[in-house]
Image 1 (cartoon, helix red, strand yellow):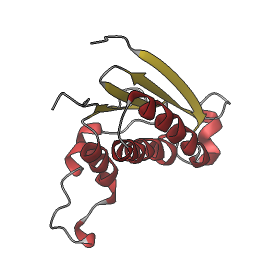
Image 2: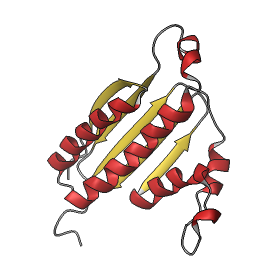
Image 3: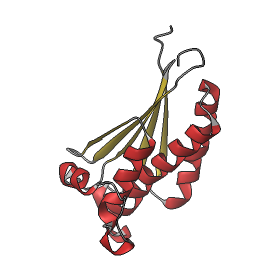
Length: 157
């Protein structure tokens, strides 16, 4: 087994039109490691949710963005940690933090609930948890979401 880790860092403006760039990078890395099409699609949905949260919630009103970041445009940093048997995607923003523990409580299963019973605030986190093997949210300075998908190679079943 190989314990080597490769780190790929991508910094993009905190704007919706750049999320596709993150998804394309994820696709290339995940395919190279050997994830299935379905696993890659799951990861793309989860990383899109994490990036969308950063775009929509981290930096608040677009008019105040340059003030928050010292004059520069706000960014999202996405780190891909490629291992032999897993891929972790770390989505980090430097915007306003939130109560990660409270958000996790909202991330309840949606089975048997009507549309009216669902709360928009926890669905993204629930979706990330449902699609990935591990999800860790830290919100001490900005927000960091670590999404991990493990690879089961043939012969390991």
